[in-house]
Every structure is written in C-alpha cells, then in structure tokens.
Image (cartoon, rainbow, N blue to C red):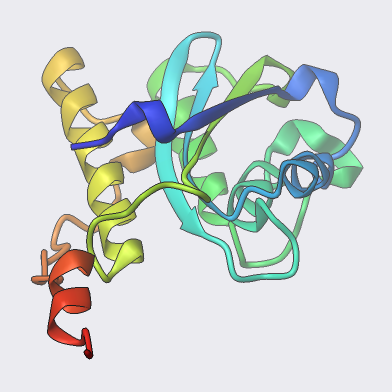
Length: 173
C-alpha cells in the first residue's frame, strides 16, 4: 500500500526542543507539507495521525496537538485547535495512573510531500494510509493506540480515479 522508498522520515525528540512552536520551525525547515506522524511516549505508541498542511506553517496539526501537553507549563497552548490532546492525556492518566511528560515524547514524521500519489485525491489516499497504519498496529498489539481510540471509524472510502486514467481521458492530440 505505501511505497516507503519515497518517504523521508524525520524524528523529533521533544526533550531537545525549547517550546512547542519549535516543532513547526523544524518542519518548516524541512518543508514538510503532507505527512503521517507517530507520537510515542517512552516507546509506547500514543497516536498515529496525518496532515495535509495548507496553513502558512508546516507541522501545524502536530504542533497544535503536542503544544497542549500539560508538562509545557506556562507554554502550554490554550486554543481549541489540537485540544483533543487533553483528552488523550486524561485517558492516559486514567489508564496508567501517571501523567505524560513531553520530554519523554518522540515524534516521527513520515514525509509524503513529494510522494508519487496514484489517485487524484491525495488527501484521501494519505488518510487511507493513516488508517492502514492504525489497523496494522491494532492487529499487532490487539488494540488501537490510546490517541486513536476516539477516531471516527466511519471514514468512507470514496472512489478516487487514478491519475493515469485522468491523464489518458484528457489527453489531446
């Protein structure tokens, strides 16, 4: 399903960054616009996600989520965008009995910015890849990552024409 030979990987250890916005700075420097991500806390997978950034800052989605970590203290983000991370932290505390510290979080970015998507709907294709990662993890471990438990399971796979078919249909000459 995913041709990993075209995917660059970027690892960001939150222990090594000063403020949440540094995530966006790192991703801006790498020009990452389309990506899957994995958030791990002490080698425990917390969440898989995806973003098709069209904001002016790369990494906006993941920065907004991880910026809501309670351990950032006064630097913690307060807006509603990404605040679902607070539910993840609460679920984590209720399950394990202690709080996550952002300094123990590793963020892995799978960069699909230059990926050779095969369908005309790249967002849908990337979303399907995220679902594939979550389902593969679930088969291996027996449950979804705690950060994906509340995900909408009703993602409807809509047919998306292959780029090659569209190119053939609209070829003139």
